[in-house]
Structure formats: C-alpha cells, structure tokens
Amino acid sequence: MKISKIYSAAVIMVAALAFTSCNNKKFHINGNITEATDSMLYLENLSLNGPVKIDSVKLGEDGAFAFDENAMDSITPEFYRLRIANQSINLSIDSTETVKVKASYPQMSYKYEVEGSENCSKIKELSIKQMILQNNINAITKSPNMGIDSVDVIVARMLDAYKQDIKVNYIFKEPMKASSYYALFQTIQLGNENSLIFNPRNNKDDVRVFAAVATSWDTYYPGAERGKNLHNIAIEGMKDIRIIENQRAQQQIDASKVSVNGCIDLAMEDSKGQVRRLTDLKGKVVGAQVGTESVKLAQENGASQVKQLDSNAQAFMELKAGTVDAVILDRPVSMYYLNKGADKDVKIVGTPKEGAPMVFAMSKDNEQLQKDVNAALKELKDNGTYDKIHAKWFGASSK
Image 1 (spheres, rainbow, N blue to C red):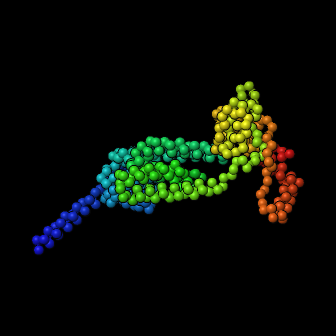
Image 2 (image 1 turned 90 degrees about the vertical axis):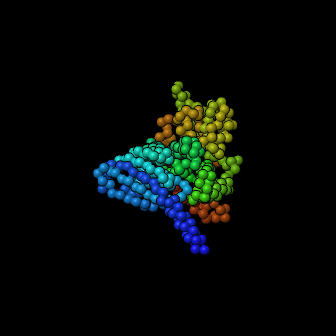
Image 3 (image 1 turned 60 degrees about the horizontal axis):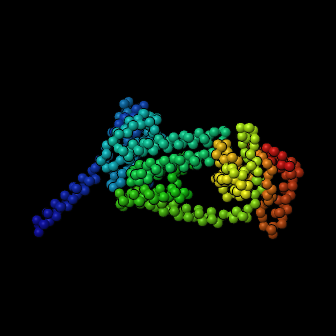
C-alpha cells in the first residue's frame, strides 16, 4: 500500500514537472532601435481583448533590447507588438521562435528589418502595403480638384484593388498563416472614421474571406479561441448582410414606375470639334447610371453597348477617359457637374428629353401642409431666392 502511494506521488510529480516544462517554453525578441535614447520600449500581447503589456525596457544609446518571455498557453501563433509612444512594429511569434528586429525611431513602424520568422516578414509586407494605401487615399481626399462623388469612386476602386491583391497573394494562398489572420484586421482611416478594410458587417465577399481563414484555422488549430472568434465574426456578418439585403429589397422601386425629369446627354468634342448627339448614339458605347431611365433611353436610341455605372461621378470619369462615347444623365446632375468645372472637358448637347416634373410627396389629407409648401415655393420664386439658389448650384438661369 505504501509503495503504491509513493508510486502515485511519483507519477503526479513527473506529470507536474512535464506540465511545468511545457509551460516554460520561451520565445525571444531582440535587436536594436536607434535614435530612441531613454525611450521606453514596450512589448505587448495583442490579445482578443486588446493590447496587454508583457514587458518593457528603457533604451540606451545603442538602442539594444532583448525580451525572453514565456510562451502563451495557446496552440496558435500569438500576436505581439513592439511599441514606443504611437509607433509600433507588429509581430507574430510561435512558442519557441527567436526574432531579431532592427529599426530607427521615429520611423520604426515602416522602416525596420526583421529576421527569424516568415510570418513576421509577411506582416511587415502587409503593414507597408496598408501604409501606402492610406497615403494614396489621403492624397486623393485632400485634392482640391476632386468632387465628393469622384473621391468616393476612386477610393472605392483603390480599396477593391488592395483587397484583391491581399486575397489572392496572402489570404487565399495561405489561409492558415498568422499573416492571413493579421490581414483580416487591417484598418484604413476614412475621414474621422477608422474602418476595417475587410468589413464583414456590410460586405458579403468580406464575410467569405473571414470564413475561409476561420475554416483553415479550425483544421490547423482545432479548438483555438482565435479560430472560434473568426467563426463568430463570420456568422454575425452573414446575419448583418441578410438584414441589409432585406432592407434594400423593401426599398427598391420598380423602374417601370419611375419617371426621370429632363434626361440630357453629355459628350466630349472629338479631335475635329464635333460633338456627339443623341441621334448619334446608334452603334456607340454609352454610359448610364445603373437602375435609371437613362439606361432605357440609351438602349432605345440604338447604343451598341450600354455601360451601366455605379454613380454619376463614375460616368464623368469614364467619359473623360474615353471608355465611353457619351453618357446620359439627369439634367440637374449634369448642370451641377458642369458648374463645378466639368465644362472644361464636356458639353451638354441636344434637347433635354421631357419627363415628369419634380414633386413633393405628402399626405393628401393634409391640405394645410400643401398650402404652406406652395406658399413658401411661390415666395422663394417671387423674391428671387429660387433663382439665386439655382444659379449657385447649376450656374444657369432657372427659366
């Protein structure tokens, strides 16, 4: 009996030693960050609940540092960052890696070298790509020659191109990698809002990207918390997309029930100074905003191809680029763009196609509201305010 107890104790002790040994796995991060004398360098774990401080060191003149840390009790690669103030270097570390980093402050977030980890090297590539994208977007949004609609179209195209690159060359290529997980959570600053580049809350394709990585992590890291988190994000994204799609379906109006007020066509002069007219559309490539009466008008006038575009701003861009021969737009929209400088490149030609007048929709039982609105409109016209507003936005007489 005594021998049995001793044996049991020995087994427990061996098991405990083995458990301790497993948890004593260490990873190592060392290197130099110059031009940061007396600065505090922090090593932080990027947990699912946010950054958690692991260790810190005050840098000397040579900027040398060395962190030797216990590995997280996780079957997946873990994410860390080296940070000085608001500058950081993102890293992914497995349980026993040794990673060497060289950088110079305060450009350390994009000018650094990393050795010893393929994932860390790819995360660096992704970080630099994201910074270039942000700089390009900033340049577009600050351009004084770009209208709001034009900026939105160009930024959307830049984001689509970036996402395609990341999906093809990183995420779908190696979805099980830490770098693919990292790519899912890259952000971009748009105005005052910091948004996910891959946003599963409002984009069906982005939900699929999250689901692809989640499925792969289930295979390579079964039961991992990060994998479960990806699945939860994908599932919630699917729910949000269904809600958005249902709302859009309820708001959609049958195109046959919509009348457009004053469709006119715009076109660029050719090399001989001639302008394309509505009757010249036969056999030509014509642009029109998707879902509008302009598409039908182009088809009725014999266009060989009707290029259906996402926005009026895109129509002007396609026209200036020469990818369409003409575009057909609503008259107020056309006049607004011409008034904002587009008249240097395009002209209004032909006679506007008459459509239904613009109206205010209100309850037929509220006669007083109808009288008040009509009286206000009459006053605006009588005192000249209407003409001033019209001239400000459309640059032409309202008569």
